[in-house]
Length: 118
Image (tube, helix red, strand yellow):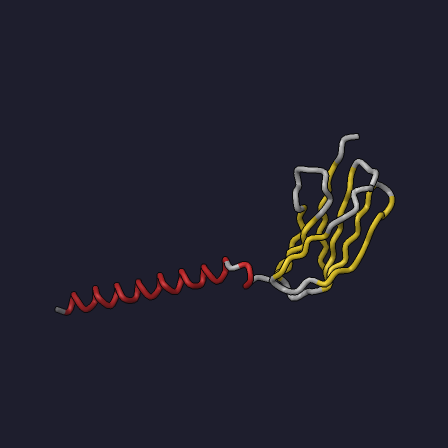
C-alpha cells in the first residue's frame, strides 16, 4: 500500500513537471513573446525591390534607405505597430548592379541586398 502511494505521487509530479515544461516551451517559441523585427524581400527571386518590415518589437518608428552603388536613391520613415508587418513598394528605376536596403529602428540596423547581372 505504501509503495503504491509513492509511485502514484511520483507519476503525478512527473505529469505536472512535463505539463509545466511544455507550457514554458510553447511560450518561448511564440513570436509575440519575443522582442524582434526583420526585413525581407517580398519576392527574392525576381527583380522586384519591394520589401517587408515585420515588427514584433516595442519600436514603432523605422527608417529605410535604398542605395545603388555610390548614391542613395530613396529614403523614408515609416510607422509600423507591434505585431504587424508593412510592405514597402519601390520604384524599380535604380540603375546599379547591387541594390542595398538598410532599415533601422532605434539602435538596431538590418540590411538586405540584391545583385543584378548587367
